[in-house]
Length: 197
Image (cartoon, rainbow, N blue to C red; front, side, top):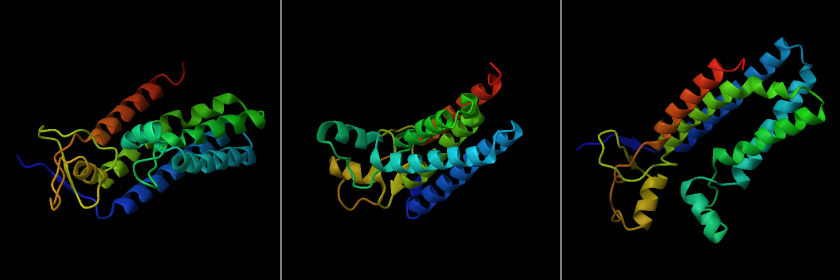
């Protein structure tokens, strides 16, 4: 069976462009909705800045993705230096909450990013999909994908002896990044429908 091959030659570029777009989108929506609620622009900018700063710190300090999580728990280090995950970026959400509290703003301000944050989290999985990180287990299903280049999927399969050196592509794997994208969009739709409750 011929599985689609994802070329990870520009993986860092895609991941970075999608991340920047999501930063801008989430913060634009947060500030716009805050202004509509007649909240001070200075407070909104400070809350957004704290969120962005600690999000970036979190993704570098807490590499909680797949293989990284098991290595951090067993050895205290990620499997690959520089590995990062959006899960570590939850520190940014915590920083937003603390800043809202310190500024004595309404905690409901955080509701302004609930839906767009879930959409952004889903879209970030496209960056993961295109770079070959956060991949699934080997699969023979028709929608499984192979990775070429220096993708984590290929490197890990080589390390564990699932591939022989010299293979051009990885074994087909579940595109869990796309599953997560769909799940985030469903969660965003539910949050949007129930936002008044």
